[in-house]
Image 1 (cartoon, rainbow, N blue to C red):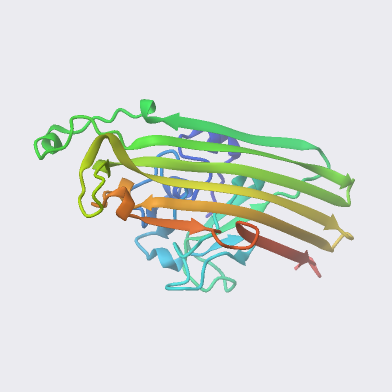
Image 2: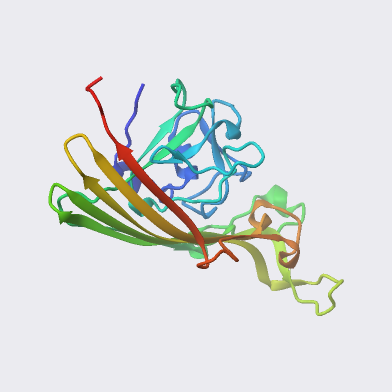
Length: 291
């Protein structure tokens, strides 16, 4: 069975801008793991997560870029073991295999493949401009939680944003194309009954009620791709992307009972030459026969 969700549908649904949480929410039998709760419109900021299908393990899935595995090789080697997050401005389509995978895949799924844009014979521009803040969240807390000591209002959303622009077209018509993609996206979520520390004594915590604690997940990605149709059957592509990201104060918005200065920051690209991570790929495709 194959189902297709077109771009118009994805843009209409309030489900984020192409993170794995979005695909989990739109796929029957799939769930997003690791985060502890579902993403709402990108509030988790494309944090490390994976897609589990039909009650299976998240690590049974891989995330691929044009067929190339992008998972890290530590721990289970799949699912959430990923550092690279996808700049969906440069993605033409996303394929989610939920079962019946062939011999090209060593795990049962859900396996995800991001198919990049080539540019084509027509110049085009694609953009994203999305923003939401705490005024778009009600923050109402049920009475039974108020009775247990929670505030009557506790907004979980601080802000969600996604800005991007991509453009591409022909360098030589019917022969050589390019596509450039640029994106900055992220999300900030408050932790319930968690506040920054206003104490000047390093070993003492005193909650600053005017400054609720929050998780800050942000990402920046710039990339370019060239495609050469060398002959009718021979196609060459090359691409390179630069990315910088941080899952800062991770865990606070998921309910971890820790103050911001005691929480964990995952800085992706920090200390790497060039100030960020690099992802490059070169492919050659040659369909030898029509079989």
